[in-house]
Length: 300
Image 1 (cartoon, one colour):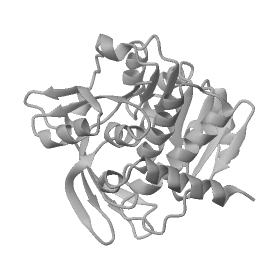
Image 2 (cartoon, helix red, strand yellow; image 1 turned 45 degrees about the horizontal axis):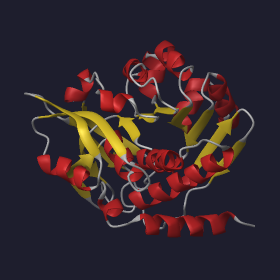
Image 3 (cartoon, one colour; image 1 turned 180 degrees about the vertical axis):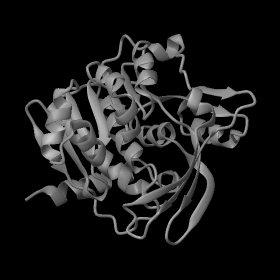
Image 4 (cartoon, one colour; image 1 turned 60 degrees about the vertical axis):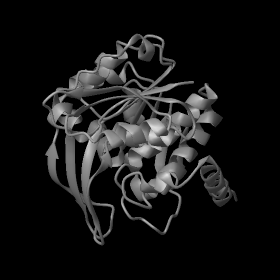
């Protein structure tokens, strides 16, 4: 089934301990869409400025991603992020953030987008995410991402969102902040009790944790020795997860476990190069092969 994603479309400048790249393709909706496209048709909603290179749109279209929902704002500038990764590659410093047109992003879905059954709300203001929910009445599965900024300044709106979505994806520090609890297991259960049917906590190089009313488990990261650029890994994880679920068209415990596993292996490819460079060089067979290795690794 087609999968709808609403999120940021960006130009990134990334510095690592060994290399750097300027103005590469980035943004939550971009990483998510490309990762999900290995599994399912994807509809992407976002906004860019007049400085947006049209080659990036063609690149996404060549992948089969529906970019008709990308709005170009006349006279505007595209969202830009500049960051630096520290030697351990787990920590990074945000050097510059220019929201530009994304700061005023008010997505309006067409009739063709409103019938989407699988919906992912990329990191954005809970108010914006709620406005999208109001436009997809036929959604079968709705999952959202969030971050510490919204937890701190829009907690009430986020609380409303949590009561309306099926799943929430966030990282470990955000889960602890939202739950006001430093114990990650308790935090996961607390956040799940706020409304969503399930919660996925991303833990970077340590994988992910899954929480539902009747089940909790941990999915370790795939042990890739080549970590070049972690940017977009979390969004790629979500894209692999949601893409697999949309392809199956169902939501049951076994499908969710498989979806998280696909998310893990998709993210493991993303970190092996800058931007989408590594994902460009693989196909679905590569993902399935690494998933088989991952499945074998977890068997005992």
